[in-house]
Image (tube, rainbow, N blue to C red; front, side):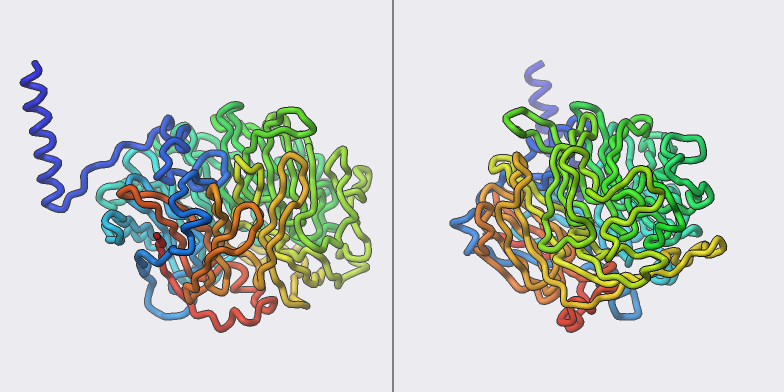
Length: 587
């Protein structure tokens, strides 16, 4: 028996070596639910969109540290393909997080094409590209907001990705061939999908964008084995469902918005999916849609197997400012007032950071993370609602002087409608207890237009007004102590932070829309290293190891909503050339 096993082992090793000589890579281990649950133990890999289900975006890798980071250099770069025609729309904005498994890296461009690179040997080699053939003419004209894709997920021997026109695609990890695809969203309604899927127990969870087109938002789950939909939970409840009473004019709920366009997180200890919901529609005319408008501007806790809503917390009821609550939900175990708490923390577009009990959705603490908040005087310390909120009023006027209304049609608000933070993800340092937020220190002008009953038209903006820029917009990286909810450090930046963060034991990595890639001290936020990539960064960095060496990677190429509508707040960025590049750094 021992001799037979030895012979078999030699044959297997020989076949593997032959496959390598012939250029056929050996198949990596299947990605299973057990591996995803224990993703933190695979320290050199980055297996989920936020690295782990907790969405902390923290890596324990420390070859690149406070003492060595000054030696960080470009290891290799790779240009991602575009299409004919030139200009920003050839590739869209790059906002994705690379996924790395045992030296194989998977990235997407704005059109949802998936690229696989071999990262061994200190250089990148393209192994395959999957082009989903997204209709560029349709997407460039309709998609809200911009041509974007934020990355992939892994399951079994497949790469799972979304396309802007609403498809879920499964690609063979080894060959790059499409195994199957199914339509999840309806582009004829203005629905688009930009987020990376989240996979829980063999289900691919999809969120949708398009509230500005008057869609009815949802979160949906597809069984990756049967390729069929298992559940779809609408964020705007139907008549008679819990929450429907918060739409006092029932007709407005049909086009009530509630997009879910940022990847959620998963708490295995309570078997709870945590996901954020965006603004109601029309965005700025809250007089037209009286009531709290659930479940817009909310954090949801859901059962991942059925989609049933377990609990909710609404951040800005009857929102008149376009203050989405889609931001990632970071899972944190800590002490608050000397008691152990299981929290989910989220940085809302309304300028406040929130800590909620992730078992119940109970409000724990809230604090402003931007320098200027004018729309409210603060949060009720017991409920977490804006102090002006009155549950008996069908239409809310928080700070009446800056709340747009039919009697007050032009107002200036802080933060602006792009938020104190937009979609770019935060990072959390579990040892230091510090949570880092990429901040947009913004104010802008809102002009309301009165919505009429016949205002809604499919695939046309349904916003009840619009924003404009009245001043230059900078940014910051802000650190919050999660035990107290207090801001403990703030590093000002000349531009808004549009690309997200990565934390390691000593460092916080960030990219700027002017092209600067930087490393900050995790304790003080002092800048320790920077590199000019030559093009705008609107994607979050990540880190991995291959051949026992640590690398940091980031996609470079400005795009998205800022490029379309907010460039007046950063006029210098008009000189930044379009780009579609992957940068990888090492010591």
